[in-house]
Length: 404
Image (tube, rainbow, N blue to C red; front, side, top):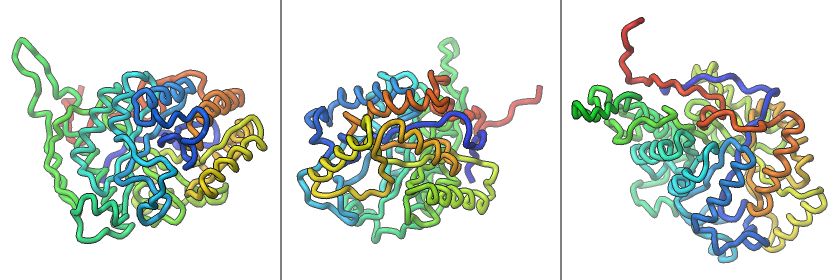
């Protein structure tokens, strides 16, 4: 079982945590057709640099970069064949690495699909991102049970059940965490006089053997500056119990895509039950609500914009997350109410990044600050620090030193 740093349990008082999910031109399928969306720039570094600069100016905790292993689709079981929506993505980890030197405080959390990737590669990529960003990396783990994605790889006789996919994801995270610990913090000596760069005794085999992976280790990348970069995962309505167990056992941040206060309360309770069943009641990951947001100066303007985008898309976009349509003040009211479910933060999906991200950073954030619910300056240099998570430099493989 993994060892996790402890932290103060989330409460309904104190500052909120805010993250933003970045995907193409925005969450709405017609976002790329909005004024200011600049679809010709979606696959450029400048596009992403501008977005993260806006997010950091708004003092957000972190951004997530969406990713996948097949073209985007509105159909649940395969490609939809539509050509009127954004199709194609850049690699999320590489985007995060590219923009990391352009930011100083913002956390950078790329998405990876554990179903078709090797934990050794992911551990190395995210550790590298943590070094490049000087301690601001995370990873959002997701699964895929779609046959058309499996056909890109051809490694399985059949796509596993949902429960098996989440159990595999839990093993994947366990291997990644062990590999991050496989180098002790002081394994690199770098002593020119003696000619010793590394202390081989402080590199450790992880020797993981489970149902899904057998990994010997150690990593080939020195331990990340944070020790353990932040791991996040999402639970959507209708997900199996294994999804709640993944958040409870393996994640530092869980996103709960619940609709309404009642569903949010039920989702939080489900994660807590999964913690108790695993004997992890003392461990308390951050639980964030999920919201798609259309923000304007008032409700009618936001509703009108949403209706216009729906018309362009050929109908309303029915996603897992709840949609908020209104003003920054109205959204602040909702976040205040919703946190009483036991949420310590929220991940917001801008419907149109060009419009709704600035509305978050320049409208919602000042409103939350006026209410004493959000920071007025960054108070930590690492993502774990922003989230109030301990670093715990000692790792599971380090030999305890002599008592003082």
